[in-house]
Length: 302
Image (cartoon, rainbow, N blue to C red; front, side):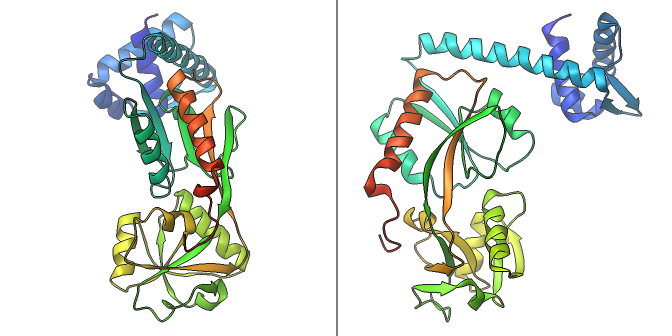
C-alpha cells in the first residue's frame, strides 16, 4: 500500500462521493475507484458500502479511517518538529477564531512584539470536523469554552469578564441609554448572525436565559449586520470586548444589565499536535496579555 492510496481513501471518506472527491483530487473517477479497490484488495475487506456514486464508510472503513488520520497526524507532527529545529527563518503560527472582531488587539500587540513571526488567521464555524482540523491545520482555536468539549483538546481560559451589549443606530430611541434590560427590547427588530456561528450561539443563549423570543428580521454575517444597523433597519447583540476593538465606531453600545451574564473566551489546542517553540510563545503571550489589568473590561466606557 502507498501513501497516495491513503490520501485518496481519506479524501473519499470525508466526502463519501466518488465524483466530487475525484474532482477535488484532480483525478478521474475511474482512477480513484480503481485505487480504492486496490487498497481494499490489499486489506482483504471492503471499506465502503457503495450506493451509486455515494460511498458510505462501513464499520471496517471507520476503523481504518481512524488509523489513517493518525498516520497523517504523525507525518504532520514530524514535519513540524523538523521545521522547528530550523524555525529561525520563517516562524509561523496558524490560529482559527470563531469571532473575528474581538481578537484584533491581541493580534496587533503580538505582531508588534514579534514582527518576524507570520500569523495565519482563519475564521471558522463550530462544526464536528473542527477538532480533526485542529490536529492537522491549526495551532490554536480561540472560542468560548462552552463551544467545544472534547478530551483531545487542551485549553486555557483567557478572560471571563465580557459583558453583553446592545448595538443600535445613533438615531435609535435607545441611543442615549447607558444600560438596558433585554425585556425592554423584546419587540425590537433584531439583526442576528447566522446559525452555526459562536456569536449566534451566545445570542440564543442570552435570550433563552431571559425567557424571550427575539424578533429576528435578518440572519447575516458580521459586515452586513453592521450595515443594517447603520441604515436603521434593526438592532443587534454584541459584547464589550467587541466595542473595545473600535471596529464599529459609528454605532451605540448599551450595556445589558438583565439578565446578568459574563462571556468567557479560551485558547484551545489539540493534544496530538506538536507545539513548536513559536506556538508556545504565542500561548504565553496571550495568557500574559489578558492577565494585564489594562486589557480587562473594567469599564464599558474604557
